Length: 169
Image 1 (cartoon, rainbow, N blue to C red):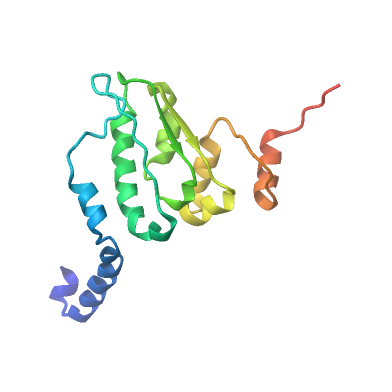
Image 2 (image 1 turned 60 degrees about the vertical axis):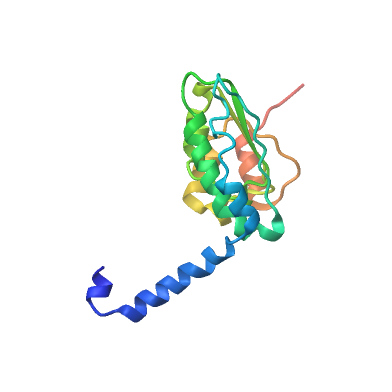
């Protein structure tokens, strides 16, 4: 409002145009169809109506679907991460391809609410690139168990320090 009252209409128009570009990518008949349905609720671990929900992303349309997936993920986490629900699991492969708001809190509190969290990604550097240094570190330091294949660089060094050394005879 200050910009408008200050006579900065050109600046506001530029900001609106900048917002329209990513929003226009979301215009998709398929996405509209999926998001307007009310076939079921997202409380997947509701004892009265348990559900299995599988959500996938398309690498060719990642920029289109990432905002919608992030919205769904954020809502699902709030609904399932509470007492009195059924045991459930949140399994995310290729985590850096979507933004998952509240993931750090989910990892920290889920176990007490019978929610298992399993995250899959190739390298810590991907997580840092897409989640930022601060949030990436919180996620890395909050997880309890790590299964790792071959990695190199900083990820290898970090995992080596975390696992430590065990002498066996």
